[in-house]
Image 1 (cartoon, helix red, strand yellow):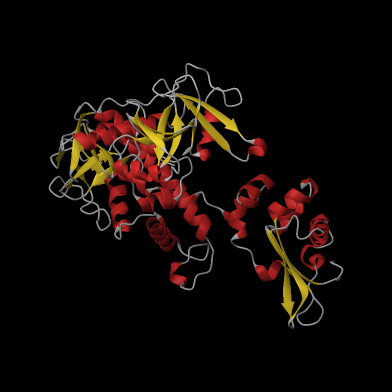
Image 2 (cartoon, rainbow, N blue to C red):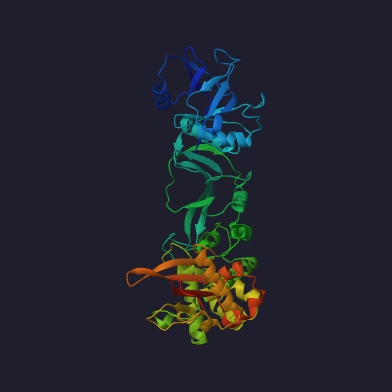
Length: 499
């Protein structure tokens, strides 16, 4: 809900009543629409400002909220007037953020009328959305009084109907196009681009401070074309200290690094390394090489955990114990490069070039990782096994852990046939019975299965996480590790004893 503050307010006072409609002075379209809502005689009053005292009245059973305002410009300045076009849904924020006693606010708190379409909300400096509303009012003022230009100056603020831009200057890009480019690394090949910020959120005074604080794709953006939008030059907002991005790269990179590394959130991180100043050297600081190498190790682990020993329709794309080292390395590298979420259709070649420029050899990194990789290590102790349970869930041999306790048809396979007579089998039987008697509670899935056109059988899916929540696992640890239990599917006929 975007609330628009204004400098001056129009008040339409209903004759013979302490009721008022408010509208933004100078907004002819809004003025006409608000007047249409008034079905009684009224007088029009230009307040020449935007300051009110406010009182909110909550109706019984919270069926609505009424707003009352007081203004020295009203005909009766010491009396409350009910605001007829008040936006009730804005009440919660006012009541939760501003000191009040059942809707009565201290006399020294000044409220301003803000407009959402033809309705009125009230804001004061103590509210979280006040600054944004003030910034929007300033922006609109600049648009109204300023002269538009396409000649942008670094450090200046530019405003137009679409938004606000803080122009940071001209830089060089290692991509020729954002979504169709390999990696370029000579000054002759680099493309000129123009970087801007959408907002200043941390009191930045210099262009270098915006680069330090902002995140590409969230705060910082790039114009790839040579023509700027036609905007009003709203004056100097930042000191142009002509920063070297080469010097800022390490800080920018750390600031942009997400808490959890996934292939989907790496584009905006690596894009930090795409841009540089005209005077910057082409080499990357060693600090960055160390940071990126750490990220690559995470990506290698993710690729292996998602693909190791998983059958594929094309055998030449599998990785695992049955694949020789050279092919494993090449296939893991291919999967890693293709996994980075990026709209660039040549992203594989772009990132391969980027890592090379960082003095990182992917083949060597993958080979080193594989030297310490042993799948059996994941199930050497219970804590390691459970922390990597997703790895095993993806490798479940469904036929090996499916209990088909149904009459007729396939050979009946009991839980005890799969897990013996030990504690694990008993715990699984107890959990199936619990889910059966409690509408599927405690298991990942519980559904009726249609057999011979009738619903006379059930399917119950149990994961290790379900079992841990259901039963203290101390006595189960040995069996869980022995069977590498991660998931079981139990099919059984209605009213059949689970064994």
